[in-house]
Structure formats: structure tokens, C-alpha cells
Length: 151
Image: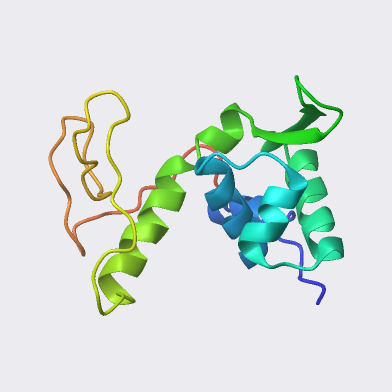
């Protein structure tokens, strides 16, 4: 299915959706965050058709979210998160946390996330002011910035 492009929309969310908004792309990114780098690893974990996986990986490379490079120890190709890709960790974690709360498994959370060095649990994603104050639902005001088109 061909999706409409949002490239002409003056909206940060629309631009992000053009880059990563397709469902398979988000699942590929989840696996990349979990440490997968090879085509066959994504294929095995996701059960996605080869042609769709290839197209989605190529799109993520074109968007600068993944980098395609030769693996150090073999002749295989690796897909590695770029800085732009790593910056999506809060988006992926937020979606996982949302799923845990609003689409829970009857036996509990599917995964726990902890700091790899200290083992300290990662707190649920939230919205905070620059001073650290949590901002609850309905408490956010949208203020136009300099990039907003004037009609």
C-alpha cells in the first residue's frame, strides 16, 4: 500500500511520520534498539516478507536513521543506528510504555528496561519542563515558533 507523503506539510510530526511512520519501520527500529543489525536477524524476529524488509531498511537508510555498512568480522551487511536513529529511543520507549499500560499482556509487562551499567530501572517516559517539573495531560499550551507559516 502506497502512503501519502507529508513532505509538503509544515509540521514537525508530519515530517517525522514521513521518515518513520510506517508500522514495519517502527518495529525494525525496536529491534535495532534491542541490538539487531543484520537483515536475517530482523527477518527472523519480525516474520516480515523479505521485499518489505528490504524496502523499509533502504528507506530508513535514505532518511539517515540507519547506516548500512559492512560487518567487521564477516562479509555481511549491518544496519546500525545513526545519531538520528538513536535519538528516537524516547519515541520507541514511549510506545512500549503506552502499550504496556493500554494494551497489557495478561501476565504483566513483556520486558523491563534498566540502565546497562547500574541496573537501575528506567522510569516511564513523561513530559517535563526544562526545570524538570512533570506536565500532566491538558496542561500543555502550544505557542507558535518562527518556523510556522504565516497565512
